[in-house]
Image 1 (cartoon, rainbow, N blue to C red):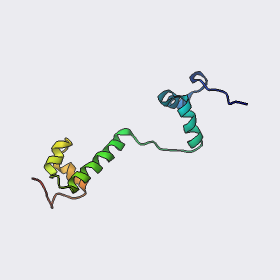
Image 2 (image 1 turned 30 degrees about the horizontal axis):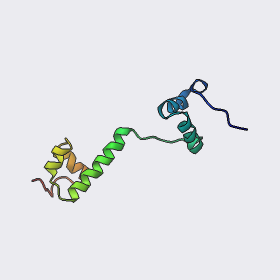
Image 3 (image 1 turned 135 degrees about the horizontal axis):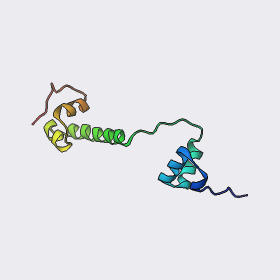
Image 4 (image 1 turned 180 degrees about the vertical axis):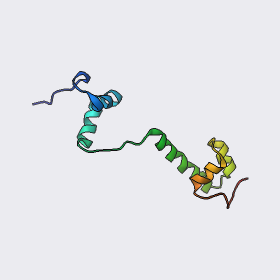
Length: 94
């Protein structure tokens, strides 16, 4: 016997929000994979910040000056040093 097809009218709550965002079939797959678990979904801004910070570290490792990184990523040099994990005492500013 085939599984009954769900419609948006038949579901509610958070599951309905997920189904509206990704479609009912994808929401059902998410339910099959993660149903019953408590999961934390990171905010998009945090994910993008992690990717940006990795890019900054890679560019610095390739020799990109801190000031240029700050301008390129619209950050202060202090923020760049924070991302790089040091206080700016070993500067490569030019």
